[in-house]
Length: 295
Image (cartoon, rainbow, N blue to C red; front, side):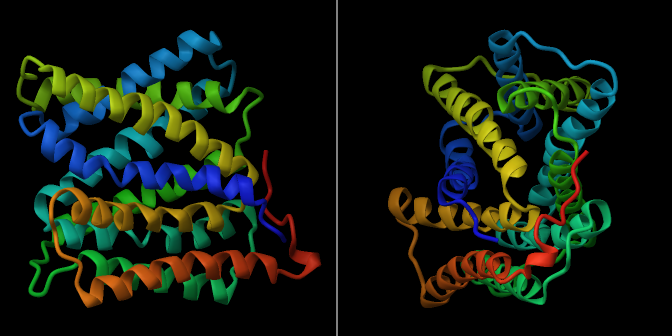
């Protein structure tokens, strides 16, 4: 099955932009707690999209939107930050990078997609590439942090596949607005109960929050859910390897961080793994094409 190049490129924008999250939050939002940033990233963007589309879910889509908002936004971000706090950044990124591998098996379970050995090999190569990019020698391994990272990857894997299975009768813009709003609202009680008060934002804080919300959430999630609707789940999830790659490149460009030989090898592995997933899809026999079931 040939993957449309434009759909692939548009979808790839999302993990590339997400790769800027670390440098933006660390440089411009150091006094903001992570869950507060997550809520401010999702909820205003979701409400803005709802104002634009002026469409609300109907019938079964209320329950589906709540579940997808939890899986793709609030639950995933919560577990992500638990992993980030309890593990060194490289370990957290490596653990979370198993998500494309999980998606292959979840898509088999929920969509009936065939498990292709080449796709599994490609996902494993991607995890190895991310490890070379971001993992430092002697990094500490906290069991709870690792469990949170794996659970976060599992959460978004199910969210990705279910977003593919449940194609809504609305535009990607409306579908994104529903999920961001639901996910942001689910984060509000967590922020109020457990997070410290938000500091008075400065102009640079507002610019950073604008980037994370308008570009890093509203725009990118629209492109992401558009890609999920048009591309096989394994192809979409493999693009997530671009996020840690982008973070490393931005650190090199703007923070003066060095690029080692292992990191360069990881760069090649990540790009190669994404290419292998596309090849696995192109090599799919005609009898197995369009195997993913949507409802």
